[in-house]
Length: 481
Image 1 (cartoon, rainbow, N blue to C red):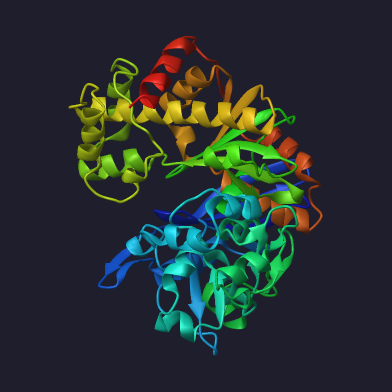
Image 2 (cartoon, rainbow, N blue to C red; image 1 turned 60 degrees about the horizontal axis):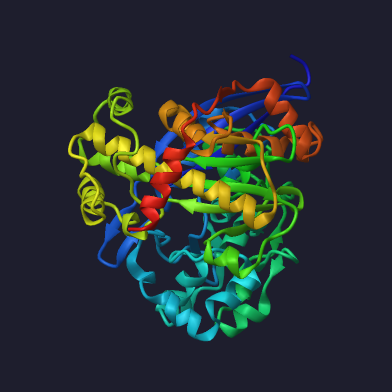
């Protein structure tokens, strides 16, 4: 195949990282995994921390396994960051967003900037771990006092690869310090909260150059320079939404994995009080788009249960769950009470007991409760997003790791009463690769990227099987608890 270019997509999730290699021509798109490595947070006396050096080691090993590439791009989860001192050295391991340090911090922030005003300025939903709250929690600490630069996780890894610093826009929008209308920092808001925005490196757009691999990195990875690093949609959800193979504008998406991110792609943010009350967020996407979505706890609930059960065979567990009667018990998949790790089966059982529903006892019953609850949360999010944005949809696209869970995909189609198109699984990596390819002129605009995905990636369609009334009844039952 002539004219093929290769791109390394570093795609970091909350439980694992991977380096994928995308090979692209104007008419083809292939993706293979070069290296996968665990992402294991570490609890130390001061709290829960990311093992960022282990992740960087995984990135270097992955680039060596990838072989010669034309460019590298990095995406990861949002909100978390590393602090650098005046010499550019890292000040400790980045704090994990599930760390307890932000408990009770929101009320302190709202005393200076009320929640409604904060949402009107940033469009970002309340989540206790948003960067804004993390920085407020860190105020007065010796570490923050020494810091001269703050880099979000993918920007930190890019800095170590290239020696150049920047802050990618889609990820910056999750800090709750960006105005989604201007797509620039909200200096007035930051000043009122005592946050110094000069800590952040200059903003970069997806597609901007981010430097080239340092000589030491080339030596360690065996690559021949120069190898460019390209700014991609460094929030993994931004890259995943860019890889939704939609053929028009009337679609909703669900990016599934540890989290479910369900919503719409819009041209402008929705900053109404009703939108804030519904806890929708306006994160920035490619090409001036807004990712209007709700964060749902996602397959984290099932992952934690599987871990507690000693990692049983997931395929067997899902087949057994499919035989359990539907909607026997449901929980609120967005309940912050499920955020922390540990004892997930017991906590789900307790939530059902407290709400007066049948308590799931077997592993299959707990699993069915989780999947029914997630499908119900998907339904609520997509219905409310359409109403609040005035943007009707005809189809739901599911991308990400949850595409492997056929039961969840069918339940989502049933709950939403809409066809569900499933795939691609490695959406974040594909979006990452396509932005790199676009930066080198190999593909065109966002619509062109999506047409290429629709032609080249395996997709599965699930039709709703009816019975939306029972989902509506379950929704009403949950709302009264």
